[in-house]
Length: 281
Image 1 (tube, rainbow, N blue to C red):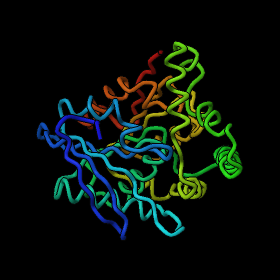
Image 2: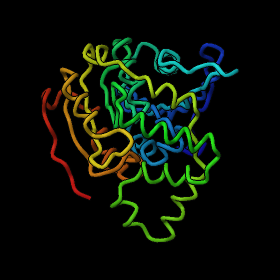
Image 3: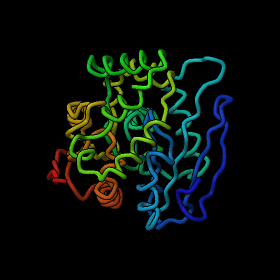
Image 4: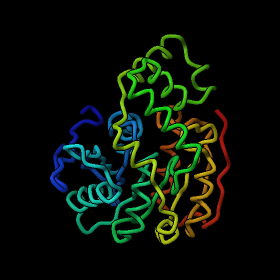
């Protein structure tokens, strides 16, 4: 793993599943930041830029979600248990700044609701609390392309993930690098199946941690309306929108870094209900 120099790596076993974690170790006395990756990613794929930027001044922890063996279904309970195990192993007795992206945001929401003592502050990036028809249509297309072995699957993922502005602004060389990365990436069917059935709105309303909700204006995987709903559901939340597609961790990592770094350093510096100004590309 090449996320950061002197990175501590290890494994914690949760329900018989090996969960690989990564810890920058050095901190500044503030709660460590724990990053939860998305459904098409891994810690390295999603946080290759964000992790080292955050780790420059604070301790950062992340891990790869472990998937069940022998054809078993993945459950949200499994994922929350993995987050809890990593936090309790690496930061025992210390609430963390929990940052979830995409599917990781769903896990972060459930963790903050079910284990409030673990969470000092919460950042939700391109998350949702109830899967809607738009998402089910996309997941159905993904499933059909994957099951048929279609070469169009990587193009579909690329089209869904990135904003038109971002892709069109790349040089040909940079665009081809993105295409190749898309061809090498994959999503487990068990993650897609779980994402089909997310419905935790009642739990989200119990979240007490100060929260920053980040919506992506050009998101075609998790429509920005979901982030607006999260903002409305969490009583101690603030809101900001970024001019990006779902792959905001690839498109706008520096902007995400600034938002996360400022918020987790002083979660109560702004008031519940505040809406930050939207920047332009």
